[in-house]
Length: 204
Ligand SMILES: N=c1c2ncn([C@@H]3O[C@H](COP(=O)(O)OP(=O)(O)OP(=O)(O)O)[C@@H](O)[C@H]3O)c2ncn1[C@@H]1O[C@H](COP(=O)(O)O)[C@@H](O)[C@H]1O
Image (cartoon, rainbow, N blue to C red):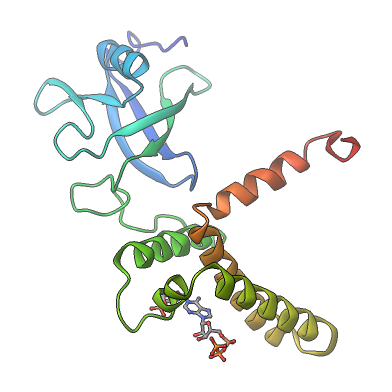
C-alpha cells in the first residue's frame, strides 16, 4: 500500500464501506500512525482532527469496524476500507452517518429491508407479520416461499405485469425472512451469483 501521506499534509480521508451491504458508513481521516494501527489490529482507527489524537472507532460504544479489505484510490491519496461493523456506526444510533438509507439504488432497498427484518427477529414485536413468521419457524417460512413462488409463476403465465411484480415481491420478502432465519444475507446470494458470472464458471 503506497499511500502518499506527505502529499496530503499527513492526513488522508478514509471512506468506510460495509462489506456486505456496500453502504457508505462514515468518513474519517488517518495519519500514518492511525493507518498502521488499523492494519495491525484489524479495527479501524482514525486521527481525530478536533481532539488531535488517535481514536479507534468502537472504543467507547463497542461498535468496532472490523477491517475486511483496504484499497487506495488511483492517485494514492484516499482510502476505501471495507468492514464488517459490530453495530450501528453513527453516534445517533443510525446505521450510517448519513442516516439509515443513503442510496438511491432501489436494489439496495433489499438490503435495508433485511436489516429491518433482522431487527424484527431481535425484538419480536407483537402484531408484526414478520414476528409471526419467526415464531412459526422454518417449516412455515419454507411453505410460504413455495406458495409465493407458485403464485408468481401463475401470474407470469396468465397474469399482468402488475400482478407478477406483486407476487414476486411477496416471494422476495418471504425468501429474505427465510434467509434471515438461517443466519444468511441476501448479499450472500448476490455474491454466489457474482462468482457464477465469472468466465469458466459453467464448466465446473
Ligand atoms: N414486504 C413485506 C411483505 N410482503 C408480504 N407481506 C405479508 O405476507 C403475507 C402474504 O401472505 P398471502 O399473500 O399468502 O396472504 P395471506 O392469505 O394474508 O397470508 P397467510 O394467511 O397465508 O399467512 C401478507 O400478510 C402480507 O401482508 C409482507 N409483510 C411485511 N413486509 C415488510 O416487512 C415490514 C415489517 O412488517 P411487519 O413485521 O408485519 O410489521 C413491512 O414494513 C414491510 O416492509
